[in-house]
Image (cartoon, rainbow, N blue to C red; front, side):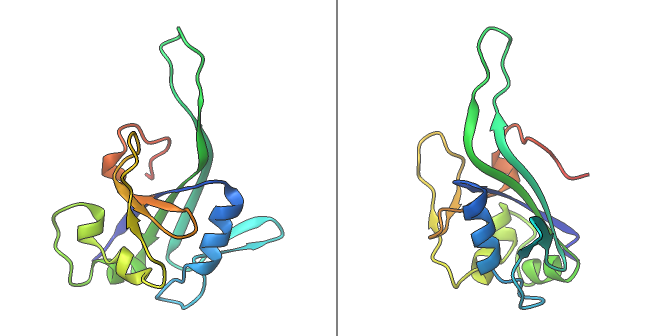
Length: 144
């Protein structure tokens, strides 16, 4: 059983994130991972999305916090989608080794992120990046 599988996403802005969600298909339903209706984000079946938006750095009180540019999102796969993601994969390793996420998003060319100061992950042609939650030292929010 896949249980709950979390990915962290980053996009240059909310519009780029929404565009990507409309293009990436949920292999369980064949529909987009999310759609927008009346300005509200509607995730596909077996998908949960927590839009965080901009993130501000924590400070020790001696300096002003600064914003980490871009649109930050927590995305979770559950149920049939989580089961599909882990089918035939090892239980060890990072989220990309343990799941088939990049294979299932194979209609997009994903390249490894090698930018200094950015966690290890993958970037798609839309500029959306996907990260293993384990590589982010201080996540903005965590699923319960």
